[in-house]
Image 1 (cartoon, rainbow, N blue to C red):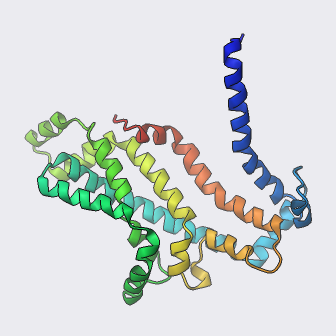
Image 2: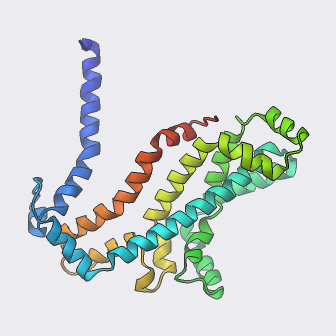
Image 3: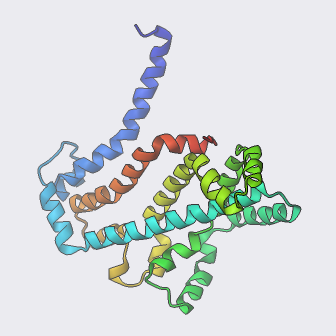
Length: 268
């Protein structure tokens, strides 16, 4: 029997869960109904999903946009967590006053809005002939102060005595990083991967600036184009939103346990 004093807590949790799940249900419901039914506020599941999907695929390069987003997001995730983990490893485990000053300057970069750097970055990458390429997308985000700070913070739980013993046994610094640091920090890597992948996949403003051809558009750009006409087909739009949401949900559900451990600084 549930204790009576816990009933208000469960009622509150049910209400919060409802408001959390309802937008996802509404997205699925809208994807299965006609545009006029969505505009009227119909919440029941309809039978027009395949029609909306056909309209989306026939008039837009859905699979191309999905492929571009996957390529950009995966490339940025792999390179960013590798570079930022190396930086966090060095900043925490190789103490030096100059490095601490450099890290403080690095944290100040978090105060600079992204839009303030877009014009210089665009001119730089345009001069380097990197527009409409995966490198133009990922280069500005390969080293982020937040990820470096997260890896440095979690590296404080890394056993320094084990690293000293490995050096005595003749293991190189790169060997320590690859064979000891990376396996022990796998929860932090998982958390960083989830954050980086979701940010890269959902990125809209920077791809809108750097990607100037239809062949290089991403899923957020495609969805924005669906809603930019005189009339919007809400059923087709919600199908696009559903396809855009699926990859991030899959990544989060697969790594949710490691994500929670990484955020709390767990080291195994």
